[in-house]
Image 1: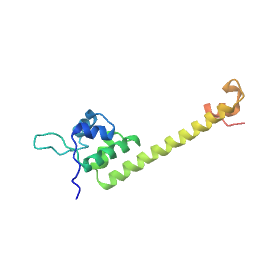
Image 2: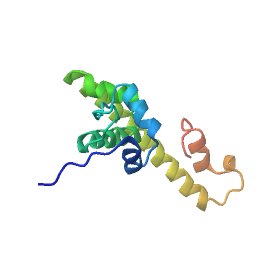
Image 3: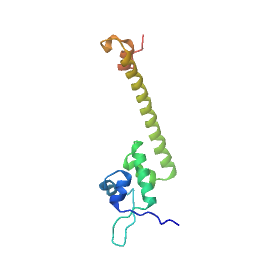
Length: 132
C-alpha cells in the first residue's frame, strides 16, 4: 500500500501553481480546511489538493469565491439556481465572443477604410441598425 502524500503549504502551492497566500486566503474565507500537523503546520493531503483544484477550475469558469462558497454550503435548490444563473452568463459571454470573432474576421477582410462606410461593420457597431 502506498502512503498518502502529505505536503506543507509551500509544496502544495507549488504543485497547484499558485502562491501560498492564496491557499491561506481560501482557508480564511472558508473554502479550504487543511488538516494541521502536531506542530500546528497546515498539511495538504490529496483530498485538500483536489478541493483546491476544484476552486481553481470554478474560478476559471468565472465564479467568485463567494459563489464557490455558496455552492459548497447551500441546499440543493439554491446550488441549482446558482449553477443555472452562471451557465446563462457563460452562454451570453460565448455569444458575445462569437459575435466579436465574426466582426474581427470581417474587419480583417473589409476593404472599406472607415467602419461607417461599410454596412456590415456599421451593423456590428450598432446592432439595432439592420444590415442593408
